[in-house]
Image (cartoon, rainbow, N blue to C red; front, side):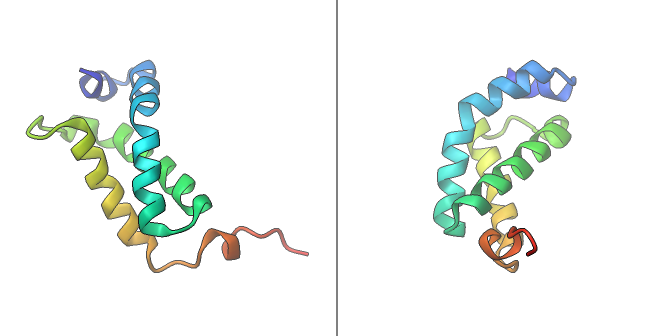
Length: 92
């Protein structure tokens, strides 16, 4: 299982997990956040949390369900910040 490999620190398993799930996580976040840059940034935060928290995965759900739960929490946390378009502009 990929998540067990991620929990053991196998970067190639994280890369495969990312390849399999990043598109669905991005689409999920784009619908919730409404901004492509914010969705892309939050996908990276989600995948970092997968790396850090893989050992806590108990296997009671499918990996997609687990990662979308992480994404939902990150989307809620991002809800209060300004859109990336406003935050990410280079100073003049």
